[in-house]
Image 1 (cartoon, one colour):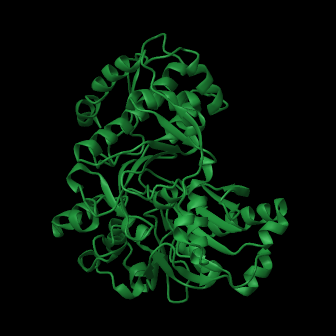
Image 2 (image 1 turned 180 degrees about the vertical axis):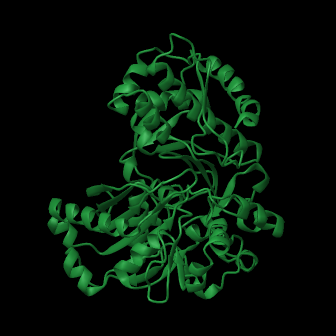
Image 3 (image 1 turned 90 degrees about the vertical axis):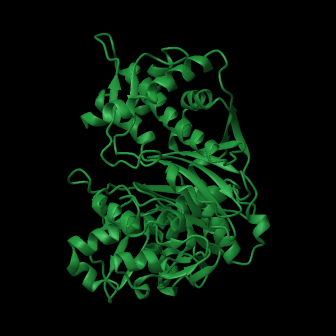
Length: 484
């Protein structure tokens, strides 16, 4: 048995898998992010530990014998978020999350100070990345930086709790914009620009490497075998890719979660920073991946449900689907949290266009679904323009549960989408596979793709109408940006 723990932005998911990586039991624990004012997004990392305890207790209760037979643990975590600690491993402040936007000026400074940073780190500086956040701390919280003894990412804090060891993997380091991607080592140029000493950084390992062993006292509390290996793990995009079997050149997937990402695996490092595509190290050794990263996804639909007073997202989806196939008149720009690919603009904002007296909640919901799909199409087109192959696209994420939304996206992209079985736990599955490799399992056996639960084909009757609406949608951002 292998255990995967996925530390997400608003929830932690843990799952136990058997030797063939079929899910035996799983649990989810939800928590809230602290966003006291625009641009600020933080969380108490103690909530992650509480969520781990809750999810592991639920799995233990559901499958006690299998849980007790766990051979290894793997970790996945939200990328870019940073945890800062003093010399006594005490938290200096809440974790600054990936969607915190305070580092705008710092990102601009890094771009100016290091003209080659995009080529070395795989992406142009953005406030989302850890490098800009650390520079923001240096400028605005110098006392914290003076006391800083350790900095790590979300999953690394959890691993320290599990093992007492500090380490991170190359995929999370890459997402922090702290990695020399070609060398798969810390970037001295970026560290120098921030004023950060290597001594505060964790050991840098590949994802499958054992980074520690489960502490005896905690093992007894959790009901797990003491001393089992805990893999270094990976950032959630990379572990999600592994959980889907995306490990070879051209293997591709879409994650329709809080944000939206399109990932395509590469077997050599080939950065495309000018296009605002991200090129990061994979959690699998000798692999990288290119990613179109959109900050807005299923969260837009949840927002629309609240805006319209709908008690459930599912109910709103049903009403939107009842409008019939094809696009509506209302257009939606989905930049409720700014945008990365292709704009790198934290100040970008959402907008509805073509509202009229008869516009109702289902019309708005349909526009939201289409706006996110158009954003994904724009990212896919950028990849193709950069010469990046995207093979058969696999689909995961909470938004993928909606068959209606899947059909809309497939038609907008004009290509089929392959919904993967058990897609909600792909990150945990990838983490568990890394754990299995840390326990000595053959890597090839841990990289098989899971079965496909459904294939959603484009609708040929509405494809032309969606293509026309997409062409109009692309004009929204340049037209509206001056009003924001």
